[in-house]
Image (cartoon, rainbow, N blue to C red; front, top):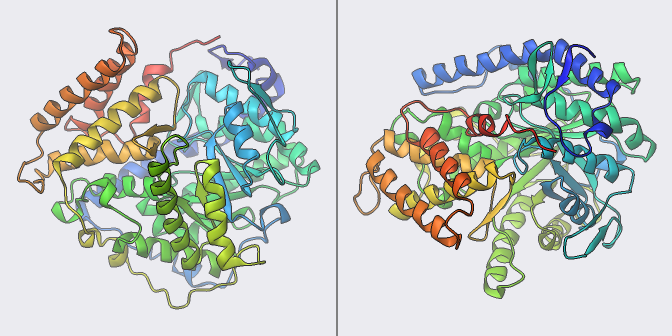
Length: 536
């Protein structure tokens, strides 16, 4: 314990950061931290190669895995039916609403829908601890009481999403160095809850975000084996669903499932981070890799359709679940017209996914659970999934996955303005501790904000011309930024309200969108701004 140091305080930490729990996390860090560092370095090397060749292809050295006859481990009973999964952060109110929503699964998000403020890191673990023991309750400042079991039917099965490999946790140091955020999130959750979940007929289930290669999946698998052995949990108890949300991972779906085959549950089409990854990796590859306005890029674009068809085909061939992504539209209980538009668009999205062979999909609001369920019920009937629906007709090539140029749509001045506004508003909210934010009836999280700022960067560096003839330059972007900053300040109604956060958000946007050097993740410099906080 003398070499494990917690550098910040927050409510409830004593319950989570016990001596044994910290020793367990320290063991993970000492065993796997250096390998994580090497894999992050390998990402940079691969990106340099992509920038040089403007190309990605399926690996020559893993062809035997792609051609082999193998399957992942059979799904546990608790995960056989995943037709509706609701996503959201792990604060008590959101957790209770998600668990009571009628969805089959709750994606308990410690990643993009949250922020790594220390109070959120610990608060999320506390919510999960209580939720797994059916003792989570919450009373709002207005006096409204929330408790598990308020909704109809069974509670959703929790699947926890830890942070991606790229983020550190500055508030827990092992041997004088920050820990890997993913190991902190996973380690604390697994240590406190694995046996409890088994006793309740479920298990420790995880969503794994932002992986870029099968070697990163191998690292996760080794973490799982180590964790199970250390705590005496049977091998294969953990089940992991991998988000295929990077363009490089799309070329290694078989390999990723193979590495995790004793622990794999499926793959998810993480559409928003996938778009971000396409822009990020081909940001300097020329006009043929420049996407139109982000709202113009739909799942029917040729390169997105190729990605989802390959995902479904790969999963079902290996006996794994293929999970659909989240439509960004959110309903409104105050505006019937907005509500109807959102329901219509989400229904069309889920109808497409169910028809394409997905076994379930994501929603971000309880009001969307029935919409998603109805569309999958129409296809599934009494079956829990459609894993047995193979897709021998699917043949996706590298050219199909990289056919960005065939995407319909234009870059517009409104698109530039919209990206800057969303990024600025989101970054202000993120710095304040909110990772999922409704902006103009769309759910924005770190992934969609990454698209917004990355498109601005790419459009500037490719001197992209808008549909009305303006060339996107740094000067144009700064002029729009000035306008949006002034509008948001004026909305506050008070000169000082949110002024510091908004000013920090503006400076952060300039750093990640308006400089020559491209920052890999906006959350890295954003975290630097908040990591020094000590919160009680």
